[in-house]
Image 1: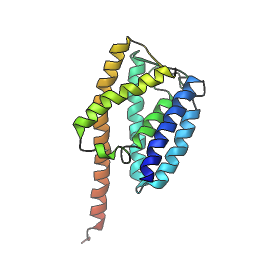
Image 2: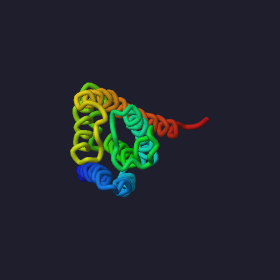
Image 3: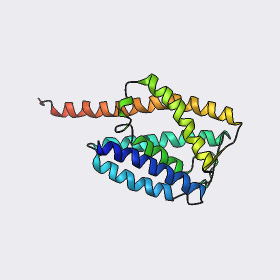
Length: 185
């Protein structure tokens, strides 16, 4: 129970550090806070290698997703470091990595429930971006409703796929561990 509370608190603190850092021209503040949290998180989990692999993979996927939304003009990031127009800023990558730490912890109950994951992704994904707009960390580059609908679609698809990815990497690990336990001829 304490690990779940730590996970939820870490997500909130890290998210705000990233968004407020970007909004206040301190784009590295959030990634530093997230890195510290993730180091503690990795210390607390059973299989650090599997969890680290998931965090890095989701960080890459999220960077590409947000990079495409930036490139398309859908989203405008404040304090966008690096300034490459097709790449999401470092603080967004940190947010994705932070979010991935919930898949085997506070959001693990969503694994195997794709319909609920679609709904929650389609609702809470856009709400996170709207909060970022209110904090002035990002801006919508297109009309508000259009942007929210695209974000709902993206997150409605991404959420169950990312949870499936987390479950499959966990399943791969269990298969490898089971094979290691088999007697060798």
